[in-house]
Length: 136
Image (cartoon, one colour):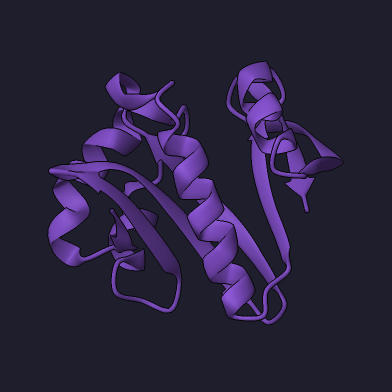
């Protein structure tokens, strides 16, 4: 099931965030639950992944997208990304941007599969890597 995030999800989402993201921002996740941003949670008995998007007029920025490590490779990320893109389109948002590590080839292939292309390179965006901005 995919649903909007709730404040009670925060502890589990924080664990997913810490386990999957190289540069997690716990405060952003905590503040986003119940705010104008869009947090979708993929649940199977408990949250196993989430997408945090910040819409702004006709463009949304996906600030975080994470699936629990033990639930990756099962199609969960694809289900969540499809739901996120559909939800954004329902709100009239067709342009979606996100940033990924330049050295994360598997992630790049995932985003390209949803029609994202690289539109910008950001040197030293992460502590130990450059970043790539994707857009669709």
